[in-house]
Image (cartoon, rainbow, N blue to C red; front, side, top):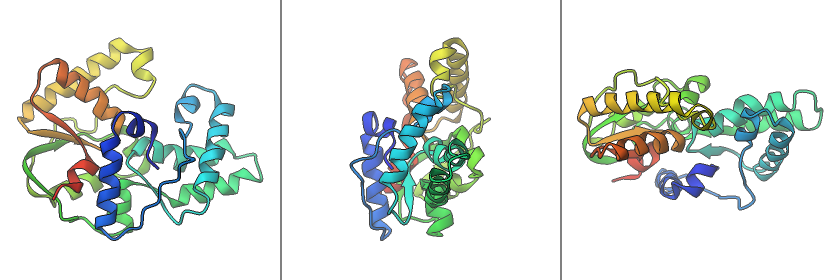
Length: 233
């Protein structure tokens, strides 16, 4: 499941995810009929529209043994919200629950399904990690860091308040730009203090927000999705 932001703004993340999974012996299929998972609509209160998109997603991935997405927010939408969206629908509720059970965020799939932490990656330099908010909801508190610590050549630098929101929050950044801007500036300041070469995150929304702020400040710190980091050899 590629996700909208990866498809539209971070296509290299999708390429890196496929490259990494294939290197680990996973057969990857990419259904062309997939669209938005419906999270923007759900978060804005348009639940009927969210259900329409959810039905398409459920149908698209109906025959997939497992679904992997390089996004904690999209994984959380499918796993946590789809069953609730269809809680009163006797036809779609069991299908939503079934897809939820088969869907995994990338680090979850690597560490908890494949049981792999060392994926053979290499990165020469210092890197830190920003935790996307939805990973907390999924209970994925350590998986990305465990994967990063196994990357050859990488010197891991802990980030102060690493689990604090960067301020993106999907439409939150649009509705409350002042608050969002203050939050991402705080995040960028903590990142700069680490004096790293790159900051790694698991969600394209976080990377877009943090990367934009760092770019406006003429920072030399690179943004990397976890998939991009782990795909490097």
